[in-house]
Image 1 (cartoon, helix red, strand yellow):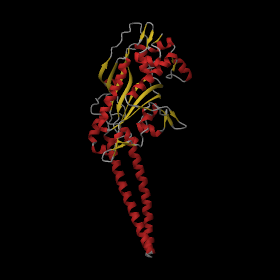
Image 2 (tube, helix red, strand yellow):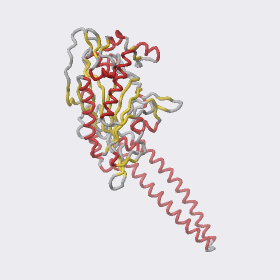
Image 3 (cartoon, one colour):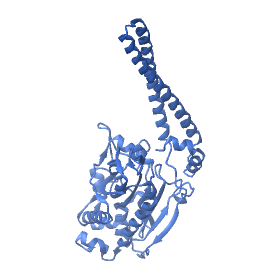
Image 4 (cartoon, rainbow, N blue to C red):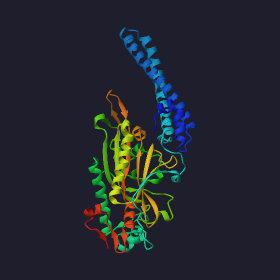
Length: 423
């Protein structure tokens, strides 16, 4: 969530930058500035009313002490009027603040100046590409056929138990899944991230803090009776660990990693792009989150991008890095890099990670601050990334590592799996 003071002082700049996200902010910013002026005027009047009431109360006390009862009673009637006025102003102030907040949450984060204009993923900018794309020949099979043959992932059984998008991993498929989870966690821990195991459901305050609410409630599974939400990513509970926290400057950055299942309704998804592991309602993902000093956050973003790239290099999967354009970047992000691995059997790129800097957009909602050298508290910056999302990484491994005898296991995963091939 943006700050009103910043919007007021940089109005034209904000309008121009948000246009890159295809968001016309002119009218809503004018409304916000008007509401903020009303709020400040009401606050000043409320403060003056309270001050006048307090002053009269002291005068009344002195009048009673000196026996001036009639004059004291006259002023006492005035204090009753001031209390009623104060009550009305307090309600007006609360209503104005609510209206202000309702408008503020409708404005997306300001994109970084490097974010290119564009309308969709077709306009994203390819930053780099690494790794040789394997030539599998004419007999290559997509992963959904391979896993059925080897009986390592059962999609139909998942439909029976729950529904489409909830696969059952079996035997060596389950072991390979667990191997990837442990491998990703170990890589993150070795890079200085603290492992945490957060809840898999969050309350409204947590959803609001990271920007899922009120923007993405239609994509989240809602436990209505308890008013809780199944997490769409570990980003939500992990970042909310620091909600309403003031950190010491010397404690920055704070680095956390977590493995969780993730739940997404994926409303409107259909067709060939959702086959097999390409798009699921429940999937496993390992997340990295950093809380950082504002002066260091973009350096940190680059380091996080390189960390994810190093993992994909070790898996020997061909991958590319894209900078998202304004039309594809998320509501809350300032700058996002996507990672895609190449699926040789499907002959397409599959997104496996997004690494983003949210600057102070989330931390303003979270009231997550640090105490600077001048003893003042200032908003931190928050960053997060997938390191990594499992389904499409697993799909790419199964497809790219297939041969006539089965599915080979990437060398770095063999110690985690205990086997080097799925026959």
